[in-house]
Length: 134
Image 1 (cartoon, helix red, strand yellow):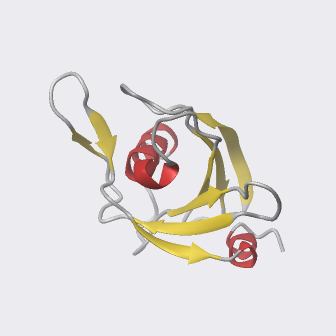
Image 2: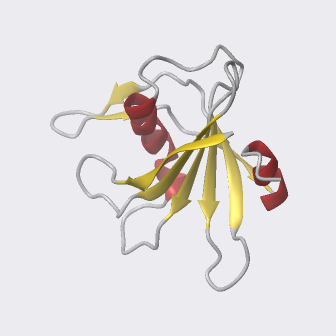
């Protein structure tokens, strides 16, 4: 896997938190890209867990406009919640009901989303394997 993008992503719309740190890894043709979304310290707002469907849809629109590989899980979205004091923190793999961004909301506050995700815990070793850091 090659790290192709690393940046701070700010959510769109009203009432937003600081955002999250995004790292995008792309592998060989036909591999699902891996996106690691690291939660930044919050000052109010919502967590990356609550906003994962919105964040993933925004990142998909920005970086994968040509589409994703034709796989059961065409994108591996990993949430990283850093430890407050020491250690690697916690990792979660998110699965979405759809990997096609859709617009939701009424009036002026319309956002794109992939829908509510299902979270599975990952160990730091599993994340290292997924992004091939071992």
